[in-house]
Length: 138
Image (cartoon, rainbow, N blue to C red; front, side, top):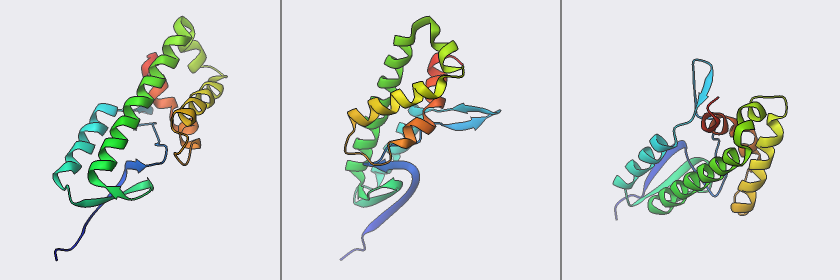
């Protein structure tokens, strides 16, 4: 019987746990790239019989981990886009000002409602600033 394959992928996958959405830090600024993240996820499908062990969350079969993480990223991006759009013209002022933390908390609450079964909802509150700021053009 062939040995089971395991993929240790760090923060690429957070199966059934919220993800850190800050992105890489480039020139002192958070720069998330969800498109590149999803592309990297799809590369895992070249090892279909493996179990994925992510940076956070539970181990999962490759197909399940990739599908769930990709959907999660799309859903969180949609929540963030809608949040920034609802702020309208005040988005830059609100997300770049002293009350920015309140907005990160509100988006974390929306994410927790969308994914109530996911562990570590605080990761959204502390890491979503990169995605929100990027979407707001900060």
